[in-house]
Length: 364
Image (cartoon, one colour):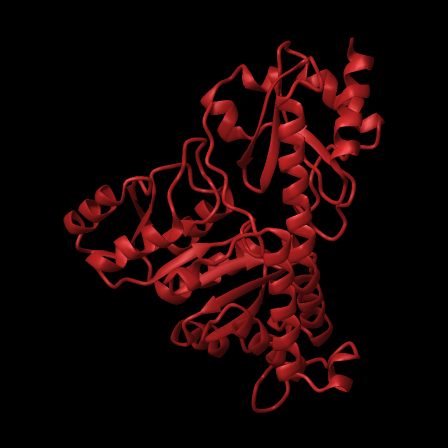
């Protein structure tokens, strides 16, 4: 099996990104302003907390974007609002020839959008589909992999689309932000959407960055008090963005160490190990025998989390051992019996491999 995981930032690159976050904060906030929990409500003239407006300016600067808005509904809500801002009911939208993420599909249904498929792994096909469907009004690109064999490069796909037609492009950057060198808008897209919860931030807050013309529309429409991201929530988004890059870079290095050690034969029951973005970047461990389900039962008893909370949220520190994704099960139904996926979270490789070894001892 061949996978094409996204290239993660190394520790030095992650440190530079952390320093950029702090530099952007200091350019917008005075010291005393940042050392509090922020204001509340709808301030006259801006219709949102002053702190939230400042945080949005900081986030836009972090990602070299024109504007930013924090919205309710986490990553799914951000994508839903973003699609609404660039498209109208019955508009055709270019998407990858792959299963659309469930909540994104719901957004398509809610907004009355019509998907038109092209294989993003083949930029020439992307161009041909655009040429043969002149009424396509926008495009959605998911940054992480939707299929096992996905290998497309975000920047190449964006350039291919824009070379044929200057339609607005929205990127789903969940599980990629703070892990890769450029998010969608830095690759030429119009809007990037992601969840703050997946970046050590607060629950329920989504982030949209990109072109001011589309974000201004959302600001104008989101005028009710209950829709506002309050000051303390906005500050928590920034705290998460500060700590996420280095934390995720360490996590990536642990994944790589685990793959190297497992494929060197350190645990004889393991047939193969590799990395994949499914959705977050995870370690996939294949056993010779059909013991995956039993290993997962024992791993939980040994301290491994059996399921995600927010998929790399602030609550997830212990390693997570769980079954392979639906995408992989569709590819090969037998994998569910022979393979597990592991996200080390904040743990080290020694902990991950110890739990695998001890779980196997209990199974055998």
